[in-house]
Image (cartoon, rainbow, N blue to C red; front, side):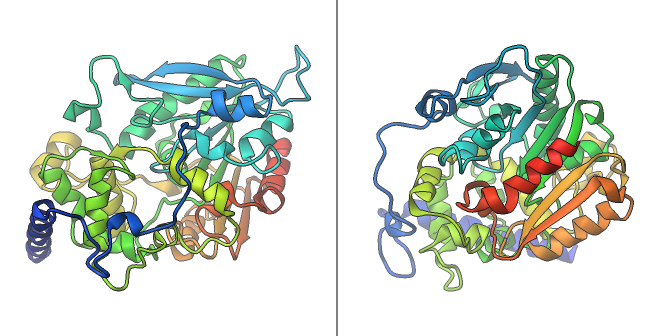
Amino acid sequence: MILHHLMARKFVVSLLILSLVFNSRTAHSWRNNSSLDDIGPRCEPSSHPFGLCKTRAAAFGYPCEDHMVTTEDGYILSLKRIPHGVSNSTKNTTRIPVLLFHGLMVDSVSWVLGTPKQSLGFILADGGFDVWFANTRGTNSSRNHTSLTPDDPEYWNWTWDQLAAYDLPAVLQHVYDHTGGQKVHYIGHSLGTLIILAAFSEHRLLHLVRSTVLLCPIAYLYKTKSKLTRLATQILLAEAFHFLGYREFNPVGPVSHEILLIICGDPEIDCYDLFTAVMGPDCCLNASTVCNFLQHATQSTSIKNLIHMSQMIRYEGVRRYDYGNAKENMKHYNQPRPPLYNLSSIPTHVPMFLTHGGQDFLGDVPDTRHLLNTLVRTHDSDNMEVLYVPDYAHADFVIGYNAPQLVYQPMVDFLQRH
């Protein structure tokens, strides 16, 4: 009861702060009275949005296909495919399929933001793989539904629970069916690791997957080092926005500006470098790639999904979405607390390649070690490989300029062995 009382007080405080923000005529930083647009890196404006097929693949001469997949709950997802590389287009050659699943608030373009020698999507295609790229519900290319539109609040009534239960199986099954029934190498980054671990913990999708690569896994978030993320969680900020009727969160939209306005009032939060404040101090990103990422890869998610992520930071363990009281949880789960995803029950025969970085604020070292202890305790030693990069933060694994040498080459070696 004391805990719920304290959370209620924080919730009221958040609502009062939001009311002050929305009633102010101009959004200014509380720290230096400057426009919120001045917070963060500056990039030259881009007049053309990036598309994986039409912009990135076409620019470098790669073939690219656009597939559409409908989930059991009606979301119509865009699935991209680069079937082969530029120089290895021999017909009737069987190529093992690889599915790349992006992280939170980005889409599949994040895998091809660099040159062919820097981007994992192109490297895999040139390495002889049949490469598929997932795009979750709510991202720019996956905003259609059989009966809803993004303007409908119900369209955004989901969390990563539904990504694991609907998006992931729909996409994996499509790749499996369209590649002659071949098992798929799965590569996930950040949120893309969480959903596959959740599925595996319930012994789902194992018949479709050949091996799994976990880049910066975020299964456990209880000890995350991001002060910005922790503060937003502590004051129940996502919950407050949801209470006020907001359902979509666009990281470059007006709601995110209002959230930053609140968060940046804390002198311990470095809002002049939001990239670092959220993901950790990266070592190996060049400015042009960061600008491409911020301008073209950032995508919407649901406010409800952010609430779910906040719950993972607030409480230990990996659970389904908490509806906030025993009555609602009983209605959805037939028990007063949300069920746990028991990661220790993941079958031991699944080959896994796990990478993590010493400077990662989201997939921080203590939480990742907790995950490793959970997986390694029962996993076959021959099927588990771990790569630790001390200088890497969260984004370095996807867009770092030296990731091809440090991460992708040993990863490809792993895939070829399995």
